[in-house]
Image (cartoon, rainbow, N blue to C red; front, side, top):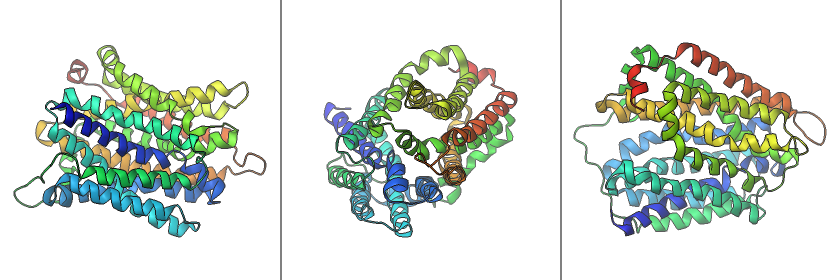
Length: 401
């Protein structure tokens, strides 16, 4: 891979995640405080990405990468996304806002897989080269948070305009990316191929079944963090929320770098259990933290994101890669993404809105956050105990660290 291509792909990742990070983190405070939407409506809004994650594999697997060059598909989707984001910024009625947001996420979510596939096509050694390219996405998420905070748009529809401008720039930039021809597959493509349903054969293995079940169940309380944290910190009186939440991405980078050290000493099961425990601990910290003497709990809960994400999601992806035969490895990854990022997080988004609404109170702080956060803490804790008792790591999994 030439240095020019590396720079091109790195900039692709930077812009890709800058677009997402510009609005996703702070949309909650805007919806519930500025726009005046309800908590269930906030949950529905955050569920659009999960719905799109369920639907988008059909687009990527059955249309995009079969008939059109990847860079052109990226250009069209991001340019369309820019127009939708700009339109979204002017919506004050939830039905219109939701419809446009869902349409936008249906454009955006496929680009995550397309950007990855384009990068894999042009790197010499994916295992060696891709992590250094992908890390620019995490860095850009941090930059996006600081940008939104610096512009004072943390509770303003202006965040969508920033994302729209970045999406337009990315759409035009995509046309300059290395040519990536469509994949010509012989025969027809079926829905089961796209969703990775061939991986269902692995569910006959009790250990893999427990892993999938645990991953699905824990994905439900996980979405409470994404849907409610910015609103919680804003109501608690924390300032510069968008930039402070980027501490989570900073820790993510750090823990990602040291994961090989932990794998060599802990193995798959302990890594997954630590990830689940971190989610439980994060919600407990949020429940009892405050912007006074307990502010350290809020920061600790944010910084735990590195363990929460890397030890659960990344470890899970590695486990699937080890357990699945080579012939269905891609299908298995698609299946676990469908179960967790799609179905699990959609349920979590909807449930987070209902729970937040149930703990509405009168007063300066319109939610009883202590009781609210203990709900996902209890859910994650229950899954942790179930997983600890039922999941048995195979010697081969422990050896292939």
